[in-house]
Image (cartoon, rainbow, N blue to C red; front, side, top):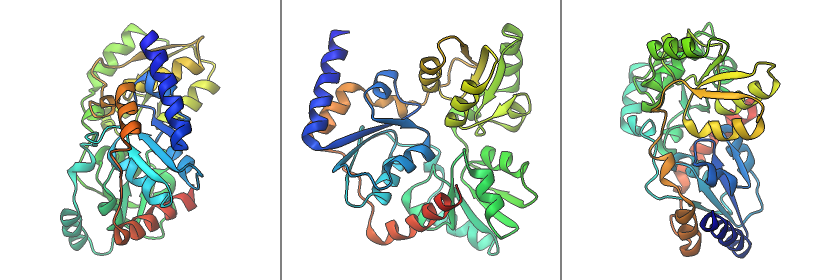
Length: 303
């Protein structure tokens, strides 16, 4: 406990010295979320970073998120808390592969999930998050959508629109591993609980849930709900804000292996080291940044 207290005091001092803000995704360790100025999902953090006056943004998340912060805040220095924190889903598609798919479907509008590199965003028409994917797809004028790179999220969106959604075969290993059998088994243990899962889960899992929601949407859903117990189907880090905001309610994960290894690379000691050395600076080349920003701005204009 003393070590955590000392680490928090050190981080607060470094924030003042650097004129920095710290932002953290909901999947980060509880103690990392607690030292952050802002926490949220990808969409919330993108909004929070826009126009910040901070000279330094310390991003506790994974690389594509820090890239978005750098794209949206060219006058700030963006530090990724752990330089090796990446997103395996984002790694499932590269620019050359996307171009091949665009050649295959030349009439389709490319909607890129934000879990992609800046270069892939630059090659896309518009971005989306799990929170606004349905709104983005429905707002696009074209009736044919090439959705990259998460096939499960794309499938979920396809059930909420009349448009033809072409699915690229990528997936999030954390969400894709949950099975319908696990949902049914856990439901037997907690029959009164509401089932909330992330739309990156498989279709058969979503079919068994009460709602498919991004992490920010889960937080709002639970806060407004009169239910007392919930089964949560997303990365375990989300349990921390859920329990903090709703101490009178009960939360259980559907599976015990809901852990993103890259999200858990960041520790308080790593944050301190990154801030002290001003290392892990994330930059995006100008030409890529400009095109990627267009895709992000189009998303933000819709939601």
